[in-house]
Length: 106
Image (tube, rainbow, N blue to C red; front, side, top):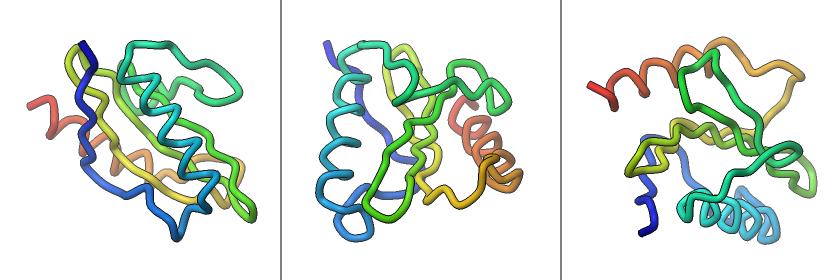
């Protein structure tokens, strides 16, 4: 049985995602729902946010998108969707995702 997808924040729509990037994001999220593990270069763990937290890496025509998610036994929880502009994940995004995850788990 597929895991349900829960968006706590953000959207994946065209625009601002280009059509190809939106389709790639949808394909990768569908794999996660089916329990398929995704590794680099498409996904990497983000233990700084919490256990079972990762980021999907979506290349777009003129920018790169990040979808930060948590894998729960029943759900794939989207904590944030943002355009990546720097090499490091901004601390404000990390703090926000930690807060959202804590609220979700409570």
